[in-house]
Length: 231
Image (tube, rainbow, N blue to C red):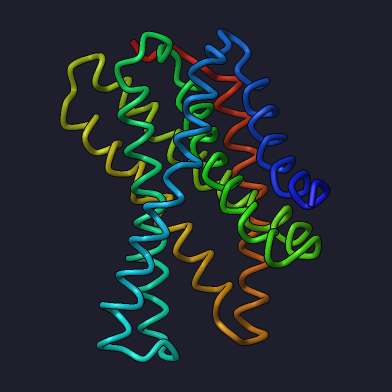
């Protein structure tokens, strides 16, 4: 059990540490990071409740779970929206007015921490029932996936903070919306291709994961190197 627990929590914590180390100008307060991680984990509970109610009590009453339309609505409008929406709510509530949030890359660190806090507890639940094979599979798919979604969330969120600081409310609102829309789109596509039972969908899924890994890695490196103030 201890080995399974380590297999579940080490990958997300490793990615948080690597992201934290990329914040070269002004490392974020450890107390804030711990708070974001814990809250990210906590929201797995309401996310699960929301998803269960909407899928089992609402969507399945009007559509068969075997249909493509059911999978589209479930993955994009229920699962992805619930999870990424709750992550964003925690991110915005805790960090938007925090004095430590003064550089663009800070938003990446915050977003990654919330998302991987969520992924850590989710991983514990999956690995607890699926064993070490599930842990290994999720270490190279679901965990990096959550990290990738959060990089796009953080990039837009940091830009929104910049526009807010210069008094451009319209642009700030636009990028706050993108901070939710882009992760939902990526998350929904990830889940949708992962749940379809076909060789073509599996191929698309793994190509998508590889491409997103490359794109996200290049994006986070560039944002780290070109970090700038947002206040």
